[in-house]
Image 1 (cartoon, rainbow, N blue to C red):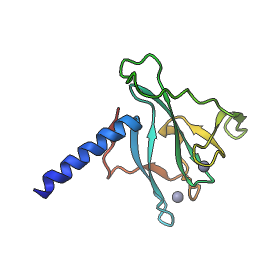
Image 2 (image 1 turned 30 degrees about the horizontal axis):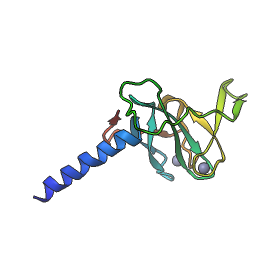
Image 3 (image 1 turned 180 degrees about the horizontal axis):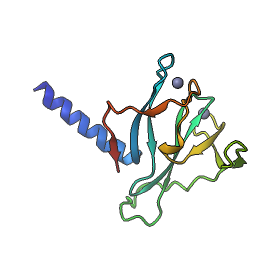
Image 4 (image 1 turned 90 degrees about the horizontal axis):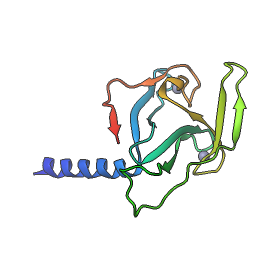
Length: 144
Ligand SMILES: [Zn+2]
Ligand SMILES: [Zn+2]
C-alpha cells in the first residue's frame, strides 16, 4: 500500500509543477571530478506561461522569471496575470560577439543574464570549467 501512496504523491507534485513551472527540465551535472556541481535546469515556457532562465551569481542558483501568455486558451481566466518582465538592459560579450539580456533576480534583485537554451549552458556555474552537461543517467522532465 505504501507504493500506491508514493505514486499519488508524485502525481500531485507533477500537477503542481505543471501549474507553477512550465518548460523542459534537465538534470545537469558538472563532469569535473573535483567539482560535481549538479542542478535541475528548466528552459522554455508552457501553454499558459512564458519562462526565462538564468543563473544568479549572488544567490548561487538557477533562477527563473515567469509571465502570463496573454490570450492562451490554456489560461485560467481567474488566475492573476503576470506581465512579461522587462530586461534591465543588454550587454555585449566581446569574447563571442553575443548580446546578453540582463534581468533582475527574483530573489535578490541582482543582475543575471538570460540563458536561452541548454546549448548555451556549457560552463559550470560553480567551477567555470566547460564540463556542465545533461546528466544522462537521470530522466528528462517534460513539463507543460
Ligand atoms: Zn539572486
Ligand atoms: Zn563544476
